[in-house]
Length: 331
Image 1 (cartoon, rainbow, N blue to C red):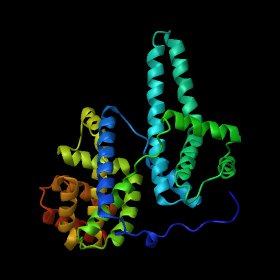
Image 2: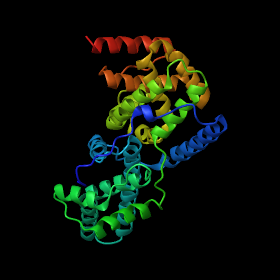
Image 3: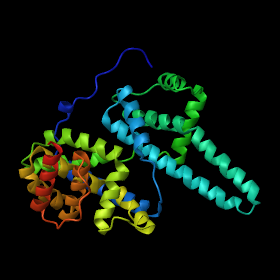
Image 4: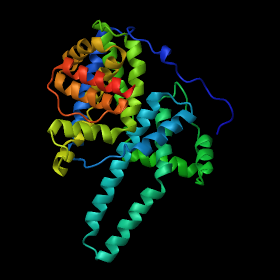
């Protein structure tokens, strides 16, 4: 690593709400909503992802080791997700082109392409973290020496030139569009609006809980979204087609943000949950039933309860069930 000096991590108390003009907030919220709509539409044709628990945990632990703020770790995961999807799409396109060759050659080329991605995965992951840190240049940039020392400790011997080439490969693959929105941006923007709307739960308290739950959703991405899928279709065994159509839901950061905030509001003060839900519905236009289902999926995984059956969109009923689940987990 880069010596013993470790900079201070940004404290939650450093984050301030209510200091931005309402006009600026309205414009920023509209921009985020438009970005979210495009992301959901673009995800419609995809058939997989790379937000696996071990990968996300690796990124989180590495970001913590390098004293990076939370926004950097989320951005690194999103950059890696989009880059790896592009890599897989490229492999599939190359495999399609190679079908005109004989089967033996096609099989050999397919294995070679997969091995190339596998062998460089850790390098790509670290490059994504480094690129994310560079977008937060006001805080801390991870130097090449730090990255090379880390890779060497894992048994990977790369040069500075190879490290720069890896970063350039990621940038080119994503058309240099790496300043991606993250769920945290949506959460913090909605909390800002909630503060102006007179939310009964202090938004600074909600912010701290939201960060914890957002980590949880990233680490348990597949289990949480699988339970949400089963609840939405009222079937414990969704078909492959239903799973593929659900991919776009996984890219809906506005939906994720309202679910995170609603779950955080319940943890902070369940008596104010209905009011917070109402605010979120009026701000985003997302149905109360959808917010309730998502927040309950998060709550059941955070307290260890079983995945529930689909509930009627009546917040008090859902709140009662969540309270019972939370109470049982503490006994």
